[in-house]
Length: 276
Ligand code: GLN
Image (cartoon, rainbow, N blue to C red; front, side, top):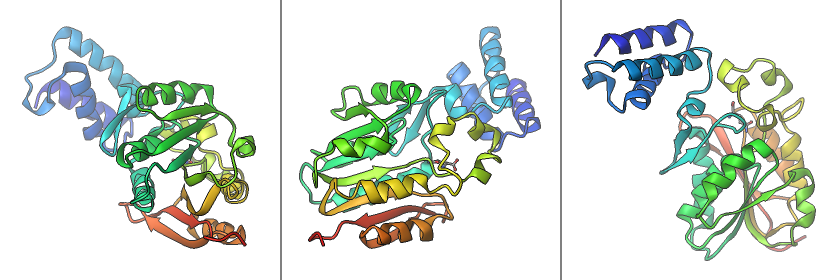
């Protein structure tokens, strides 16, 4: 352990950074290419680079934005200001959808409010032959989405999900997945400093946090084939409300899955085999 790394840990701790030691090690590795635990110390140029990075993190810029890349499942995404950071919590949402697609050849899948494209790309990588379309409205997020999906075969559409459903053929989709904005008005007013630097458009689900669930359960039902699925990421307290919205719109076999932190995180809704 070297003095520069110790100073960095102390600086991030003093700034209130959660997991300051982990972040310090990531920044050290990013600035020097070396592991801080095995290193004697940075060169002058590396120290200058490290100090600039440390100041950004001390100002509570998300670590993901500073590094410019972040891992999700078994791949790496480009991230930065203007797009929601991929979170480990979302992996269970993608894994739940993949389980539902097993045995289905060339399933047609839409990822709505795709952001970096993490969910759609996870499906494309693990469901061979899947025809995945990622839909995103924000021009800032769109830049990351197109970069992340380049050369992957995943289609991208820049559109607003509040009107996009009108363009979809009836019963053409095997599965729709989405991590929509779902924070409540109260949660939006009490964001962690890092989350406050992420785009409000990706977080703000309206006063009760449920605006996008009302839209998705109601307006995207026609687009899903009988027996197909709508898989939604939810906030930890939204399971009962989203399950109820799904049931009210005629979805069946509704269930909720927890993330690896033990919080409700994914709601699974199936379209009845025969339309009623
Ligand atoms: N999981 C994010 C958070 O709690 C919210 C993401 C979203 O609204 N889709 O900060």
